[in-house]
Length: 195
Image 1 (tube, rainbow, N blue to C red):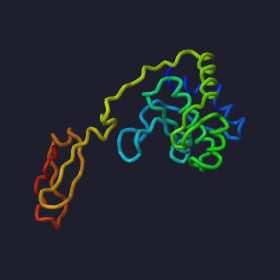
Image 2: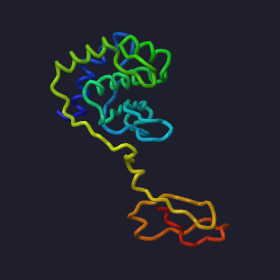
Image 3: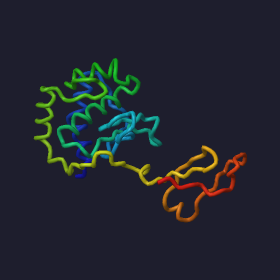
Image 4: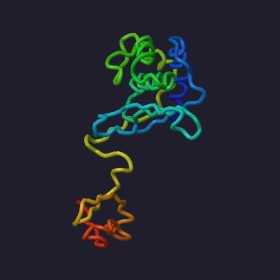
């Protein structure tokens, strides 16, 4: 059993029944993955540890949930619960029906960053005891490290105007691009590679 199968079993056997008991509706199709949620490192969005994408974002109409690989089993479980509630209430954001179900299930704190309250934490402990161990080694990403494809792009810019773009090192080794702005005095000049 891999991590995704383990989280799916946790959701199916324990978390969805809790959500539906409090008025949430399981979507027709959903799946959960372990990976860094979009915007999970730096930026204005802070450090996301879970994310739910609506069915409209998926080519095969699945609600898609992502759980950070930085989490141990108990925290992964309460973050998964939060994301499943999003899947059950796709238009509620963090208010209304989402908040009502989250609080009823035992999530506490600011609704954009919930944690398991004492009763839910105890219930999660019992759920985890009934399951095989979470087949996962917690990832520890160095503070400030960039994750994902953005870390491989190199900025190049025109020395004569404000045109800038990003390019992979592979393509930069093939050729340095030229400024494409036909009105720029540096048109057709090689762009500068930013260090």
